[in-house]
Each structure stands twice: as structure tokens, then as C-alpha cells.
Amino acid sequence: MTNILFNLVSIIVLLGVIIGIHELGHFLAARKFKVHVIRFKIGFGKTLLSRFDKKGTEFAIGLLPLGGYVQMLGEDNPLQGDESDQNLSSKEISYPQASLGARAIITAAGPIANFVLAIAAYFLIFMIGVKDIVPIVGGINEESLAQQAGIEVGDKILAIDNNQVSSLKDLNTLLALRIGETGTILVDYQKPGSDITFSESVGIENWLESELDRSVISYFGINPFIPPIVSSVQAGSPAEKSGLLKGDEIISVGDNAIRTWYELVEEISSIPDKDTLLTIKETNLFLVFLCPLAQCRMNSE
Image (cartoon, rainbow, N blue to C red; front, side, top):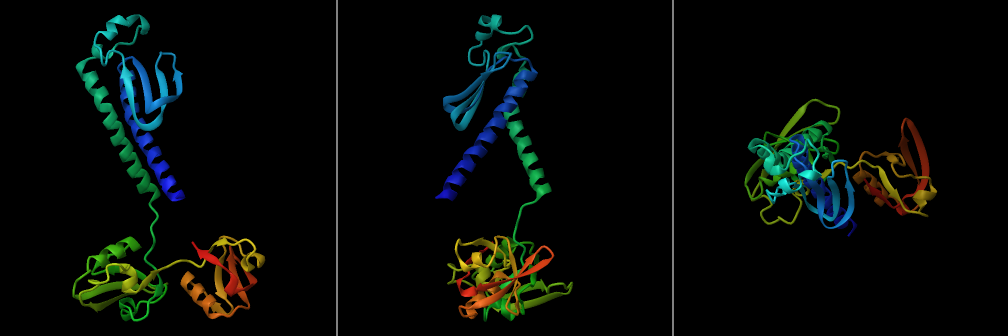
């Protein structure tokens, strides 16, 4: 429910920004050509906030940010400019008094402003980047195609059928393209810390034709890499009493090294309910906690 409300509010805010930029384009163009703006309003319905500037323009915000408008003198009534000249400064004119070119620019300024916003957003995303999950293997399903290809935990998937894979999204898309086919899937991958690329082909027959309810990546046999980092600790739990904190990275359980969340879950599942040593990586320090693992309820990030 919280996610739905958050998404709804986000959509409303986004629409408000888009509409605001659009109307701002009209407004700035009108001011550029000395056309008097009576009102600049974002939103419909009851006016929540209203202010006037020294030129007599009202700036208002409506209850529902799903629209907006810029009202210029004489825009709807060409005679309005002549009747209200006494309300204008000596440098302002009504909309009909502006030249044809000026009116065309004022009209086009809104869409142009949105276009500029889109370009700016694109470059911002390009500069900052968008988070995506790197196609590093966190677990391998038994007797799967991935296991047949020799893929192991920690390997990085580079390509499927000679098509580059940069993220889990790419991997999912390329594997999904082979649904229902018979033949082979060529997978390229690298081992951790190695520059050597391994290329292996695995046979498929009517692949996933009757398994459309399953995850394509999971059916291929790959579980995404999830670091063994604590995202939450239950109040009053043995984990909390042992000193575990949100953000702690568990690097070993007892004498067994831990690389992924799947390995952590496997170790916890195989150890009886007794005190067990957890080694936690904290910056450059390695801390050891004593914790009854079977009762340590933690969620992965």
C-alpha cells in the first residue's frame, strides 16, 4: 500500500513539474515580448496559494497539479487590451498587439521548454548513470544449463549468442528471445580475477515452451549475485544481542568463507541451533561475533 501511494505521489509531482515547465515557457516568452501576463497558475481547482508581482501578474497554485495555464491580456478578448491600457505599464502590450512572429514564439515556447527539459534529463541520466545489476553469478541451480556450461559462483556473464551482456536485464532479454526454440545457446563468461573468456554451448529443445511461469534466468540456472550484507536486524533477536548492525558484511561463518547471500543462507541452514562465530568486515577491520545462527533472522539487501 505504501509503494502504491509513493508511486501515485511521484506521478503527480512529475506531472506538476512537466506542466510547470511547459507553462513557464509560455510565461517567459510573453515577458520577453513585453506581453502583459494576468495570471500564471499551476493546478486546477481551489487556489491554495496566490501572490502578485510588481507588474500585476498573479502567480497561483491550484489544488490538483494536473494542469495549468498562462492568461495573457487580450488573449481571449482582442478588445481587452484597448480597454485595460490604463492597467499596463508603458512598456507592456496585450497579446493581440504583439507581432505575428512574437505570438508564434509564445505559443511554441511551452512545447520547446518541455523538449529542453527532456534533453536536460537525458544528459543528467547519462552523466549520473542508472543503477543496474551486474551479471555476476551468485548461485547455480543443480543440473541446469548454467551448470552444464561450467559456470560457477562468482563468474561474470559476458555474452549470450555473441550478444553483449552488461546487466541482468540484458541477460534476461537475450535468454527470453530463445524461448520455444531448439538448438544451442552460446554463453561467454569469465572467472573472478581472470581476463580469460570461456565460451560454452548448451543444447536446448523447445526451451521453456511449457515453463512460461518461471523466471528465464532462474530456469537457465543462474541466481543473481547478492552480497552477504545485513539490511535489517530484528529488535531483541540474537543477532542484535550479538552486536550485528545494518550494513555489516559477513565474510565467514565458522571456518567457512562466505561470498554471497546464498552461501550464507546455505551455511545457516546446515548448522544446528548453537553459538557460531561470524566474521564481519568493517572497513579494514575484521570483527568476530558469537551468534546462534539458526535464530539470526536477517534479510539481504
